[in-house]
Length: 366
Image 1 (spheres, rainbow, N blue to C red):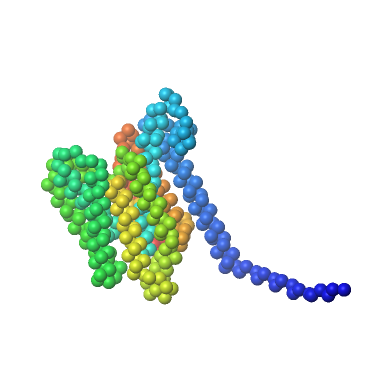
Image 2: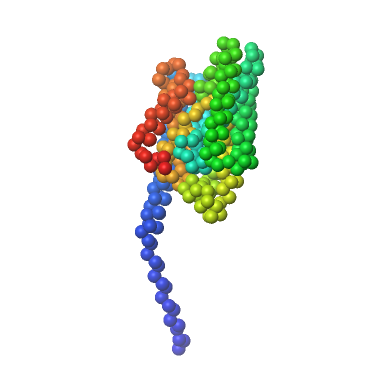
């Protein structure tokens, strides 16, 4: 008869602590919020395509998308509607959404890295530098007809050069965050003065072109614009998420504590600020100056999903995209058939929202 060995009974699993259960519930809730935000964004994008002087229904939008993605035939009666949707409306709403997402993510990075909730992507002088670059190109062209890419290149080059100079000086001189902000303010004043000088000496047509560009707009959006702005945004968001834990350490614990956690504070700060500046520069180059999204979008996202950058960054992209999308839709309808530039509308929408956040939720700025 074979003797059997008694195996010890498995140890009972330790009960899950209340803090672990709470953390798990919070994580699940944040994922649900992200999923709901994604669904809402898709619905708003589809609805935004239908807004305009030419009557377009949701069914027309879905049919056009199906034909564009999977092929098919277009009837003669539907050809004009298909052209409006695919060549005018879709590029416009996608550019508005991706530009808003880029500005909002850029704002989250700047606010976290500089530990200041009132900064925006344009704190280092990106916006006025880009405006001067565009104004300079327009002025030098005079009466000549410029290709669309000339103003874009002028704005982007000037914005990136000024940002590189500011970051280079700050790194070489080991400047504190407050000094970096002051340097950005000085750059802002200098380039605003230079742009004003160009406007003062410009003729009527040149002045009109400069002012139209500085309003900020997604009018005349092209698929090439969507491709460039969207590609930069899609590449940047996973990259920021990779450094989200380092960003949490810097934003919540401070530089000294973050270093004790093993974070290379200097390189991370300079690298992510450079990424934030690049996002803002790309958007400004293609859309003009749209400044309020990068300030308000992050705060709206914090109210909905909290301050943990692992969830805040993707949700800020959704909130910023929706904010600019709604602003563009309002601009197209408020005094139709005229179109109000989105930069003006977003200031009217973002200003009161930001005042409301300040007055009602003090912890929003912490």
